[in-house]
Length: 205
Image 1 (cartoon, rainbow, N blue to C red):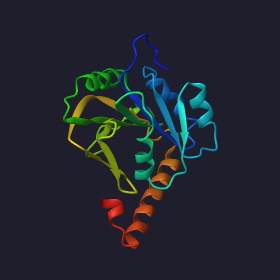
Image 2: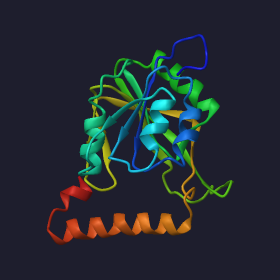
Image 3: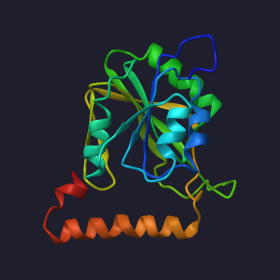
């Protein structure tokens, strides 16, 4: 899917569930990669059709927990040793697309992941003060990371983690405020249920 004559050195992983609206924009933002994987949780809309039509490799797995889903996805046969992990409502900016490939080429042997600054947008406006810690570990070396926590998953990195300067854009409200509120109510309910059963490790590991 690379839009240039030069092969990329970074694979892309996009996790999806009914993302026919947001997936095309995400795919467009990483068209420079020659190895794009969509890891789908049994979508019932056109998500899989769109991904395949654009040349992405599609793998389907029934969702159980966020950590297990991402750990399973990181076992895919990626072409490259570095993977940029995105959600469908996220966009790799042109600056980030260049920086992740440079980081993958120049990373010291002890650095196995990079944090990326994420910018949340509401109807085209960057919410500059919406997050306390807007950095997320999203560029990963294959075989050197492991996800924990069933809700709001956390990535554990073997070795050191670097930090990139170019941003990742997040269209958090692309499906509307009602959808955003419902999604976060679902997260909070799931966390409460885990705490009620005494499995605090599922949310705090």
